[in-house]
Image (cartoon, rainbow, N blue to C red; front, side, top):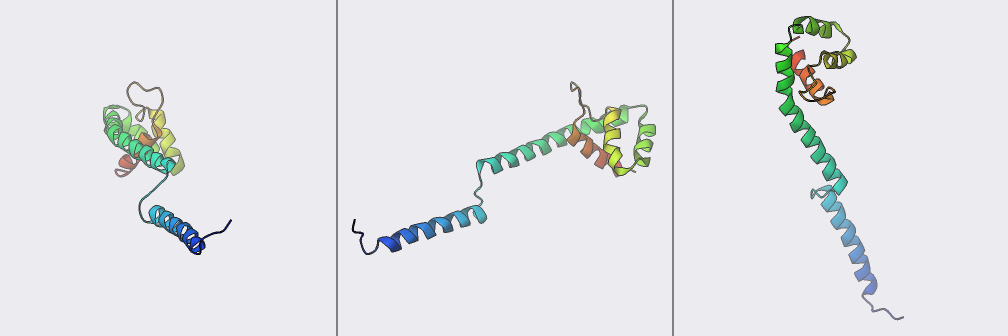
Length: 116
């Protein structure tokens, strides 16, 4: 089969142009795969839920008559044990839930640590 004289440069241009478009689009143009977009959406949703539930955790701390003792025990514990101790108090367990929320426990601990 006989090809036209400009076929090779045209095909090379299409390939180079496609690679350039993909590189620019994904690198600087803000394009992303569906999986990456879903991951970002999930992270933002988790952050929003945590921000909404954090005041409940702090309110449960304020209402707990044993809070002062528990906070002093948490303060004296090793850093890596503090979150688990806070979760055992029940403060990070939201009303209607059976288990504590890990993200809420982390956020609540950060807020409470500011008062340590």
